[in-house]
Image 1 (cartoon, rainbow, N blue to C red):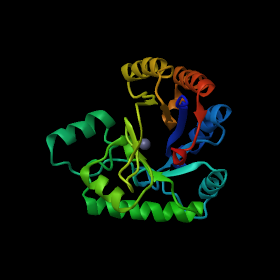
Image 2 (image 1 turned 30 degrees about the horizontal axis):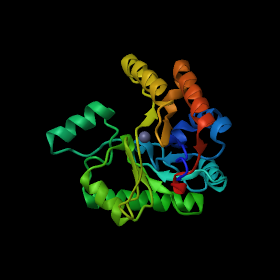
Image 3 (image 1 turned 180 degrees about the horizontal axis):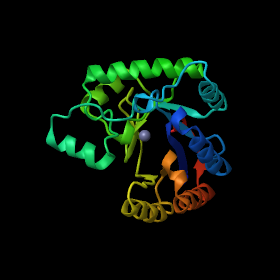
Image 4 (image 1 turned 90 degrees about the horizontal axis):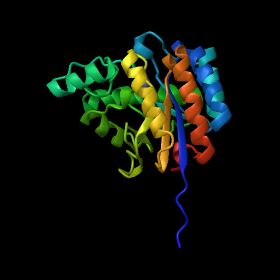
Length: 244
Ligand SMILES: [Zn+2]
C-alpha cells in the first residue's frame, strides 16, 4: 500500500522592490500566521528602471535579513516592464492585453535575456550573500530566448501559471494553477475573487498562492487572500520550492 500523497502549499510575494517596501511588509504580515517564513520573494533588481536595489542600502539589508531567515529568493526579471519590440503579432497581443506591458522576458533574445539574468543575479547574490533559489519571469511569460537563457544559467527552479520546473535539469516539479489576484479592473478583481474561492479547496497536490503589492489597496482582496491562506494552510503543509 502506498501512502497518500502529501498536500503541499507554496506561497510567494511578487515584485519585491524598494518601490513597494511598505506593501511587502503588509503582505508578509498577512502570510506569516499561515506559512511563517516558508515563502518565496520574487525580487525585481530595478523596477521600471527607476527603483534600483542598491548594495548597502537599508532595503538591501532587509533583503539579506529575509534571506538569512530562510525566505527563498527568486530573481524576477530585471526591469519587470516589457521594453522589447515584439515581432510576432500573437506575442505582441499577449504581452499587451494579458499583462499591461509587464512581460519583460517574453520578447527578449537569448543574448538579451542572458545579459539581464547575469546582471540581476550578481546584484541580488551580492546583496543577500548567497545563491538565488530560482527565476520567475514577470507575468509568468517566457519567450524561447528566455527559456534557453534559463537553461544555460542552470537555475534549479522556475514557474509559470501552470507548472513548476527545473531549467537546470528540464524536469517538471509540480503542476496546477497558481492562485493569484488581479485588481486592474473591477471585472478582473471580481473574477480573481471567484477563482480563489473555487481553487483554495481544489484537490491539487501542490497549491501555489502568489500575492502582489497592489493587492493591499483592496480590502475585499486582502480578505480573500487571508481566507484562502487560512483554508489552504489548514489542510496542507507549507514548504519551500526547493523541497519539491
Ligand atoms: Zn511581477
